Every structure is written in structure tokens, then in C-alpha cells.
Length: 416
Image (tube, rainbow, N blue to C red; front, side, top):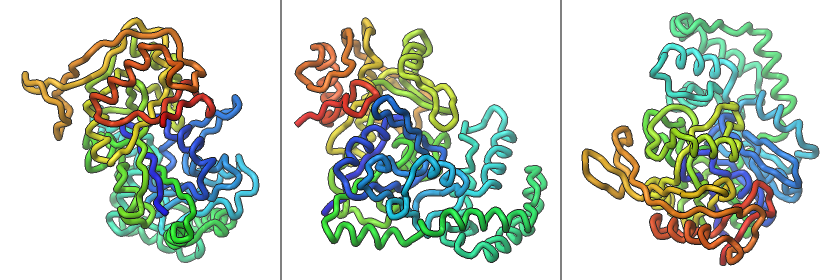
């Protein structure tokens, strides 16, 4: 059995939560491969909103097992709070003992460094994700499995602070009180110990037993640490290959890859955004699409569909199909733009260069439509909406296999 994969192919916030939740009803395991609680998946079911940050979106399927992989940086405080929304997670949620801990001092470091950068700040969520991954790469981080021995972990953290006292003094971060730190870690142990395990072996066994496995990540391809708009990126590998390293799988284990994209485009934080709209159309997208971060509440920057970036991301991830989300947000627009090429140094290009700093979007316009809300069959869409989808397929060289016409789980078109 192969593991199917869901991947964001814009700048995150594409609507992965809804698709994973919908597909998860047919899977035995749903697995999160990277990121931390800076990510946010919003899911609407029967008018009820669920906001997830670390727990895989399959949690709303009572039969699915949910796995947090080794590629995640885990905030114990955040995961415990999130777990409190649900009952009977024993046997349904498992956390890799090799995932790295994101502790409160990581958030303090994150926020202090952003302040020091001033107007050159990256625009992080301030949740400690970057510092936690930095500690991992520097080989000075701490794994979730270490929570099973709180006393030893306490000593190690205190030693870390003593060795880096000069740095923490500059950042104005105080050394934790040893007794208070031990009590905090013991609290995490009591709540999380029964969920910690070797998830890699669990996944191998599941695939060997022909279980249906679905993989999900966080953020989007254009925020990938290697392939995104560096340095305005996240600190992990958000592409399909990252799902392998983040869960202990190999490329041959991957089955169908579905790339998630909005029918328009958004970005949170700083960094280049070629198709950003600075006028009333961008404001309308933000208002109608409720474009405010699940995690931070920050307003998202909005713009038109960037087919150049999506084609690039689709190739990078090996997408078999696209899931086009929030098509209904474009209802009522007289004209809808699609970025079909870039201008760079006076030349037209149809690829994503190493830097997007100086590119300008080249657009085509398509006539708009009245409403697609609640439509569940492709043939029943307005003609211009179908033309829009067909043009996206042409420019991105990728089939649009799924179309979302409202936030509700059921309002989704599955194309054969």
C-alpha cells in the first residue's frame, strides 16, 4: 500500500484542513510530517468550526489514527491545550519520540530576534518554530522522548542556559528556575507520556498491513526552507519530499499527491508576492474569504491566482492533481485575473526564478460569474467558472481534481 499525500502549493493557508478532513473519512491513519503550532488548519463541519494546529486533521474521523511525525517541532503546552477539545484520544493519537520539543524559551528567542531585526523582520508567528529547528540542526535540541525522564531533561536545559548565558543576556531572557522547570516538565509528562512512541515503525507496519495512510504537512511550497522565497520562509521542508524525512518513509512509499491551492492567492508576513492586489479587489478577497490567520489572527495579503508559481510547485511536488479551494470567494467579480507569466528585467518568463524580488505579474482576464456556493457537480458550475478552472489546468499543466465551493465539508466537487 502507498501513502497518499496532501501538500500546500502556495504560501500556506490554502485550505488543506478541509481536504484532509474530507479525505480522512476513508483512511486508517492520518499523519503530520513537519511544522509546529505556527500552522493552523480550519475545518467546518455542520456549521461548527474546528481550529487545529498540531493534531492531524483526521481527528474528526473517530476511526482514524492520528500520527505526529518526527519532523514536527512540538509545543507540549499547545498540544495539551488542543487535545482538551477532544475526548478519548488514547489509541487514536500518537507522537513521535523523535519529534523535537518547542519549549517556551524558544518563543522568547523568536520574538526577541524579530524585535532586533526591526524593519528587516521576517514576519514570523513568534511561536518559537525557527529557534526550535535551529536547535535541532545545531544538535543541541531536545526530543519529545526526553519528556519520559523530566529530571534529566531539566538538568540538560539548565546546562544549556548556563553555556549560552551571554546570548540570553543580550536577548534579555532569564534562566528558568530549576524547580519550576522540573514541575512544568513533569506536568507535560503526565499528560503526554502515553501518546509518545516510535511512529516510524508504526507507519511501516501499517503500510505492510495494507492500511490506508494519508500524509499532511503545514504551510506551503513557496515557504519551503530550500525552495521558497528565502529568507522569508518557514524553517522546515514543506514539499512532498519533506513528508518522507518527517515521517520516516521513502519516496517509493508515496502514492497519489494532491496539491492544495486557493482559487486566488494569499500570503502572511513579509516577502515577495508577485500577484498581490493592493486595491479594492484584494480587500474584497480578504473580507469575503475571512483571510485572517488561524494561529495569529493577522490579516493575510491577498492577490490573484499565480499560475506560474503553482505550475512550479506542482512539478516540485509531483502533484497528480490540484484541489482548488474557496472558489466561492470569487463570486460576483466582474473580471478575474490569472497571473500567466512574469516580467523580469524587461523580459517575459514562464518560470519561477531563484528570487521573486524584482518580478512583475503578467495577467490574463477572465469574465466572472454570479455564485458557485454549495454546487457539488462540475457540470452545474456557471460556464465562466468552468472556463476559469479549465484555464488553470492549461497554464499549470495539472488536472484540477477537486473543487471546493464553500467552507462546508460536503460542498466539494470530486472530478473523475
